[in-house]
Every structure is written in C-alpha cells, then in structure tokens.
Length: 129
Length: 392
Image 1: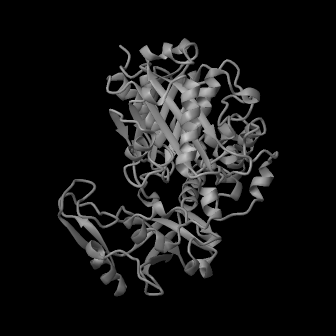
Image 2: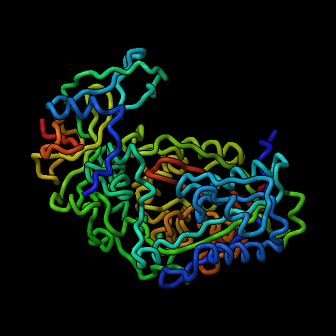
Image 3: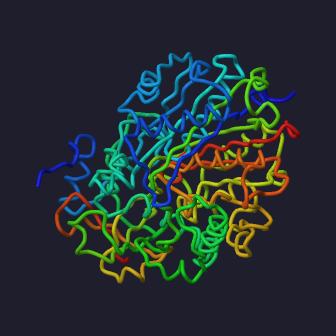
C-alpha cells in the first residue's frame, strides 16, 4: 500500500521520541504554554520559539465515542473501539484511541496515560492510569 | 440608530429541488440551472439583473467564477467562500452587507449537490475533510467523520449536563412530525423515541436516526436591494434580512475549545443585535440539524434556553408542530433532505414560512424566523434573522 501520510517535517521530533516510548509536546518559550498539535507559531502568543518538552503523558478523558464501524478497512478488526479526547495535565487536548479497557467502560473523567502505538505506526493510544 | 445592514436587502426569490427517492437527475450544472431559473422566476427577475454571485460548490476551485461564466453573468461582487453547511447563511450575510454598501444590487446564492447519486455511481465521499492536520492527528485514531466528531460533543454534553439519548431522540421525532406534513420530504413514516434508540450505532452515543439523511438536493436564493423590491414578484411580501452574524472557532473537533459551546454563541448574539430582536421574538427557527446534538447546542447557544438545559427544553416536543418553538419545519436534514450541506434549505424554508407558503406545516402568523447554519464539525456558524415587512 502506498504511504499517503504527510511529510513528517515539523512533527518529526514527536514521532522520533514516540518510537522511543517518550511523549514530547511543543512548549512556547515565550508564553510558557504547551501547544497541541505541532505548528510553526504559538497559537496563544504568536511566537516562533517552540521547544519540544517531555511529558509524563498523564491526562483525563474529556469525551469518548465508541465506534462500532471503522472509517477504513484496515481498522475494521479493532471494532468496537473507543475514540477519546484526552486533556493532558499540561493543558493540551489530544485525540487517540483507548486501549487495555473495555471500550464501553471508558468514561469521561477517567484518568489515563499516553502510550506509543502498540503496532509501531503513526498513531498513539491512551490506557487506564 | 439601526445597523446599516438591517433591512437593507430582502429575499425575493427562492427555489429548491429534491425528489421522493432522494436522487436528482442530470449533471450538477443542469441541476443548478434549474433551481436558478426557478428562483429567478419566483422573484420575477432575470439573469441580467444579477450583479452579485455566491456559490461554493459545483466548480473546481473558483466556484463563483466558473458558475458565472456558465450562466453568462459578469458580476461586480463575487464570493466562493466555503464554511461547510453554514456557507449559505454566510453568503446571505455577505450579500446583505454588499447590497447595503451599494457594491451590488441583486445577488444570487446557489447550492447543488448529488451525494446520493454519486454514491450509487461509486464516488467517494468526505474526502474534502482530509486536511493534512486531520490526516496526521485524527484519522490514524479511527475517528469516523463527521459522525464521530458530533458523537464526542454529545458525549461531553451528556457527561457535563446529564443530557440523555431520549432527549436527543425527541429532536429527531419532532423533526419527523414536520416531515409528515411535507409531501416533498424523503422520510415521512411516523417515528418514536424507541425507534431512534433502536436504530443502531456507528459512533456512540449517537444512534443512526440521530443522523441526517444523505440525499441529492439543490436550492437558490435571490436577494435584492430595498429600492428594487417593488420591481419583483414579491413587492408585497419581501422577506427582509434583519440581522446576520458569523463565527468560527476551530476546524478539527480535537481543537474545539469546549465541545458543549459552539461558535453560535457569537454569530447568534451579533445577528440578534443587528436585528434588534431576541430569542423571545422569534416565531420559527430553522436550525442546522446534521445531527440531533447540533440542534440542541444551537438552542442553547442562540439563547432559546440556558446552557445545559437543551435536553429539558426539547423533551416535551417544543420543536414540533404546535410546540413552543416550531423548529426545522421542512422536516430538516434529518427527514426532509440533506445533500451534504443543509444551510440553503434552512433559508428557503424560513422564507416560505414568512410568506405563508408552507402549506400543512405553516406556522400561523410567523413574522420572524432564524436560519442558523453550522459547518464542519461544529466549526463555523452563521446566523440569519429574517422578518416580514411588519417587523422591518
């Protein structure tokens, strides 16, 4: 299958760290706030001084939707799976899939922790803390 | 002093096209041409009168430029701005503003889309949502768009405010009650809350019947300046643009600041302020109903009820025929038609209600209406307040 993923570019350090099992987040050196997703200018203050900063990956489920149908054939084997929005303790929100839990049991307010993609792909997951 | 856009332009022509089986024959330009012809006939105007053109589909890139060439129109105001389902409310806002400033006099707003026919022909849908940011940060996680995004919003609203699936289902039920009164609606069989809850789930907590239809459809509007209204077929019943506002806060659902608060707070406040009206003055609402949660959030954000109280507000059938706030009176995107963007049909129905042309579903004595479009994944909203001559 042809790889249609975008050029890594700006986010390359994220994926390199993820491959080592480490979560890193862009943090603005001008205003001190964390940023997600990676971009060239801080969306809070406009500075271009963004630095990759290690994160413990701890967060809280903000919203969850259990998907009984997958949008692409390669994900069909995963159903039912829980798509979550997680608020990391650093103040940014990430989308990911929940793992190591019954999808129907994943709840808003639950504490979770970030993990790299168990299949080594361009994804990541959250597991119960 | 009133806002200079308030009452400067009137809708004097409307048309829409749907079909009982949800498909419309012909290539897209032919479909567009039919609704344009019908809207101009309704207005009693011709293509030569058009000096402003608004469309954001149907072409390849320069939508309004491409359509204008096809029609043989050389407009002095052109707009291809695309904000998803709210584009047509945005176009009305921009047309009214351009008309108020004398930058154009008579505007044509056009929409046509044939996703149901395209699907039968094997075409792929939703490719337009595949932005580079989504490809990298959302799609790998299996989010089913657009339903998954709206499901996340419903999840959050339920968790924070205790909103129930039954309350959301009631919105679909009341919308269907309007569709039963609309002979042109696609889905007209009576519907119950249990039917909705038992309809299956793609992305919880939404059910299949919390989701809009996928049909072909087309529509067009003609707006003109106040001094031209007497030259039209609707000299005696123009529908005035009293207020309009637009706002967007994000593109991807994972970037939405608060999943229980849409940009409708801002677009609605500005539209009402311009109109010198408030929610209590509105006789009929046409709220974008891509999903039941879209309606519930709009009710709260436009001020028809307090934040968090949308579930209780809709639970007793307030939006249905005879309810306190008649809403989505065509049968909406849930039961009438939904060709990918429902915003045009909200406006067409609002105008018909204010003219008294809505037949069995007429809201008696309607003088004010709100058409509220919502595009993307609760990303962009545009709110239009319309009124009859009496309230201008």
